[in-house]
Image (tube, rainbow, N blue to C red):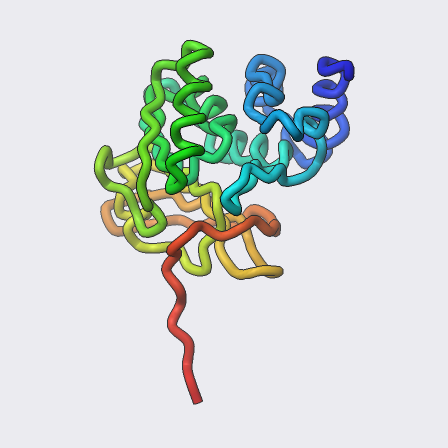
Length: 217
């Protein structure tokens, strides 16, 4: 398999058409080698437009979704980032190239350990991978400039918004299948938030998520 041709095709045929046009983001996709984060049995599908199974019910997001998240967040050199759901560690590595430090939390111990190993072997030192349940917030290292939640949530817990600094940005996928929407939340004041609906998508939910209350008749 010609990995470089497949990578080029991924960018040109999947990612650019999905309105990812930021040159810094596109260049990074050539530097951080996605195939190094894909399970061995799925190597040939590393650049496919699909969610790749990681085991334990977890998935690696589609390349176009990962790239779009990076573009929407507009990361800066000094940003402290919370990532909820480390998964393969690929999104973590992408975030780390733009941010000062990434705190990534993974509920599956095996995935957390594998992600740590991948970071260390590639000399990525500005990442802290922790094992835990962050489905309702993780203020241990807050406040954060950026929060990225890589699994979906029926409702967005208030704790995530409150863990943002003023000016901070939060990416989340909110809703239940098949109607989910990607949201960008920006904290514009001590008690003020701006919300922007970005696009529709569908990804597996985080474990132990907050479930919205429903009327029972």
